[in-house]
Image (cartoon, rainbow, N blue to C red; front, side):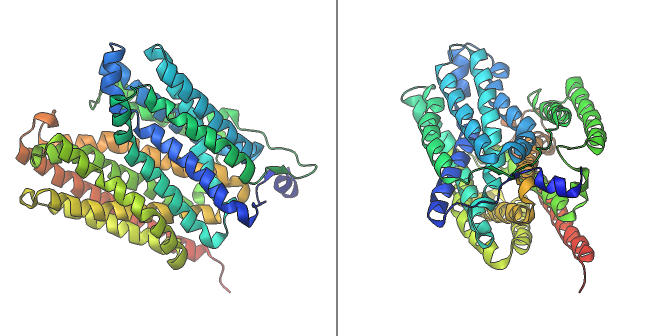
Length: 482
């Protein structure tokens, strides 16, 4: 295929909506972001209730959460690429419809097996929504407002994450557990007409031949990611032969995927993309930062309850501060990124996260909840700045016909970081506390585990900062001189 044919053989995604529709378009994208993040967080609080309802063990009911996360992780890159090829608007509508329909099935599920299958279908819809929502920013807002739009989407994601546990608890106490899934239905039905009417229509250039979708590469990547995600999640914190076998399978899958993509005529992910310093650094730092942020969710409840002796209500209140700070910081972070530059604010965000992490490593239990909250506020605000700036830097420069797959890769790097953080940072915390069961550890052991875990977290952020600065230097050397 010639380069001219390659340019023509794509769906056109550069037709922006009229200025009067931009706000409505962003409203639709915000709804999709809220739905996907709410779907992630709302089900966790229902697991004890669902275990009693279906007379099932925790190992079985945890698949209600795992099925959703696995579906997102395994198909999000393929969903983004498929949107690039067949049209992002129509695929996004399909994703919202699938998510909404699966929510109905979840809410009416007569058995645990039906509920788990419906949650997997819900995750497939969420993967499409997450992959394509960021990709649409380049088509709906001017380039100079990309950061503001990314900040708005980040705020909606944080609101969904923060709202999930409290909303889920209220619904379970009121209408019952089925309502935590059925609440998505009116939001999905509202998002569908807004997206259909106000997002730019997919247009194919006349005489263009559509590139073929890389089915083999997509299946290989999905299998590889599933093996890695399962290796990090099965066993409830232990690491046995099954986890090791899954990691080996994931490693073999990576090697086979790279080899397949190098030979594919229309690869899912072009290997040359990873030779771009800025993109590779953005993906790596996103994964590292997400790993560190997961540490706050893994360590936080144990530190507050065991080391500081707070009751359940106070633990929940303190744990809600982080998502609230992220929600309040998202929009200002986007505006700052537009004004001062996304690359510069990425560095600022990383510095703030590292300061917060090292402050947690040095905190003393004598300071009480305030000694924990102040660094968490700094860390979370830095995360909001980093996430907005990093996404803006990547999505502002990517080619229109690759926005979907790159958006999927950004979301994937974040998800892999969260999955890795749950396992790795949890293991670091347990090892540093000197016990296999942190819930019964002495307060001083938990406090020591907290300090060591966040010292490791701070070191990871320093590594992310070094990767970012080295990538910028490499990109500057590659830039043509005049």
